[in-house]
Length: 335
Image (cartoon, rainbow, N blue to C red; front, side, top):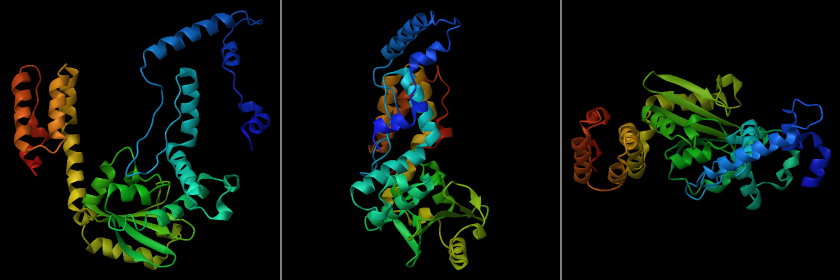
């Protein structure tokens, strides 16, 4: 259906800002509306001048993946509507829509599933995206997962990289597949055994986790709701097998490659130092902090990091209390 046809069919969704402004006019004749519009436009111009770039939130790309970008606008009023509609759909669902379009364009969606108007829910689309994603990346990511079980219907795997977790966890609300915070993935991987179970026929997907610290096994559906095994479509023997192996096997982190372990440590290195560096930035020492970040977050030798650290601490100790030991001995950052 064309945009013109949609407008004709859904006239209740055609919104005119001047009509909305008129609702604030206390007169019965609308004689104050022009004044209100003038002030609103003046306010908009002030907001525009305060911003050097178009308003909106965009996401980047990870290893060539295509991510959802929130629509941009230089009009603050339009942006409010964009944010409202964005929140009503949800970022995860809009990301799924972007992935669906990519799979559609690259002919990974079956012919009888290609018409989006035949889908009744986001969940229906999530299933197709999940199946198409598996077909796309199974060979590409075979070294980034540990497959513990696979037959014609089900695959159970442990993600061993952020990219693998994002890919196989796409279309879900699992914290371990969040694109905005990798902490959950790294923490769950260090403390236990994280397994994604996917039905290769209908796209059903579950996250299973065994926490070795508290010796607890849990199952999570695609909306990140904890469920009992009887509430899933997984065979009971598959769940039992994953539980037994998770309880006796090593944590996911132990299977990480050296490169992924380095990424994990670098992530927490930044987390530890974020607060003290932010405090220095607020005090006006942007240049010194920028130098420190280049060294701390880069691949330089530890001795250079120590020199920068000592320079900052010695110079500003009298103005800011900075307990570097609280954020970790710098020697732990040595390669």
